[in-house]
Image (cartoon, rainbow, N blue to C red; front, top):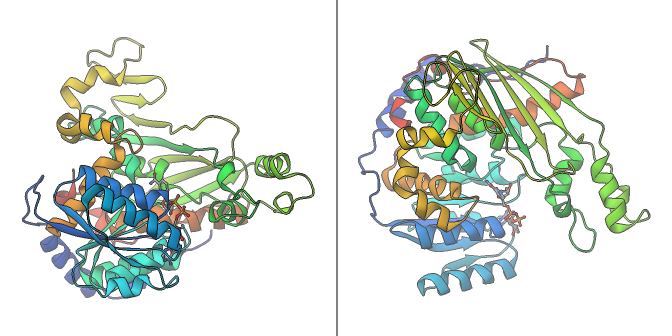
Length: 441
Ligand SMILES: NC(=O)c1ccc[n+]([C@@H]2O[C@H](COP(=O)([O-])OP(=O)(O)OC[C@H]3O[C@@H](n4cnc5c(N)ncnc54)[C@H](O)[C@@H]3O)[C@@H](O)[C@H]2O)c1
């Protein structure tokens, strides 16, 4: 069995962990009220489509936010962003465009309360750690930390800096996903013990630019075999099964099919003699991961960026009193409208159990767009975190443990699907189901 460095070995000193618990508990009791519009100043690093969408979301749909500074070494993207902010709010943010370290200069500003990092997957972890180091709250885009060292580094810096860190895992904020969170909390599913989460998204047309040059997404699929973008499938499963809140992911095993589809696509798109056709994609077309938890619960994560099929995020939660399957519906024993052996639509439970976020602002969220409204609530929580200093629902421990699957699945695949132990980033605090209670949504 492959061992991965344990968080406890990393901290090496339990008194440090105790002090950290006390300080984090204190910082988790922020004073700002939910929905407050006190001014918040956000900087954004990475001004691709995602970073620019965050800026639109912040300025058009969230309350009391300004964006004084933005950073991207691609000057055309910085210019597009300035135009966007001018159009939406009538002012021009200062731009930081002098190369790939210029975000450090932006982090020296004392008029930024928080930073969103929306760069490529290889740089998210490093830049987010630098934000914490500079004393800024940070929101880190998916896929969080790419390496296991970054996972540990993020938690280290979070605990040291006492700044807040939120993984911007928007899929956890889906209307159905949050309804299930609510129903679980109220005991409707009974004891949960099995969950499936999947992210299957044919991104092959983003693997190369129009000239056939490989992009970071292509490089990810070429090099980072394993579950290299796991959080869209994993996040909700972890929240439902109380991972880091009474349970933890103990070990995983991964398998993948032979890589065929990305190469076939490249040949068809750019020709058999092209450079694209010579790229040796190492990620199999379908990656399946099984995770076992300390309490003996299981999670299955299905992942692909190269399947010939429409986009899909499929979820399942099984508890001792029933099941929600995102394709077929919900069945709860002895609870109307579930009857006999039949599935009922989850919608029939919404009048009673829809999460308060969606009940209150669901219409506005859907209008805003952004993956049918999930981005609205994700960024809403990020802004609340920055405004109040309150620890978010999806915090640095979730960011690190969810991201660590990238490393652990690769190790498992190296050993033909062998079991790989997953690190505990909480220093054993996961055993207490209440230790992050103030962060629950
Ligand atoms: N949560 C979601 O649903 C979701 C959706 C789309 C993208 N994403 C994530 O958001 C991120 C951005 O996605 P995108 O499609 O906009 O990618 P992109 O490659 O188009 O944009 C990333 C930008 O970051 C810039 N950048 C990279 N390193 C930098 C550095 N050191 N300093 C300053 N700028 C730097 C690049 O120049 C580029 O403009 C990715 O990590 C992606 O995984 C998440």
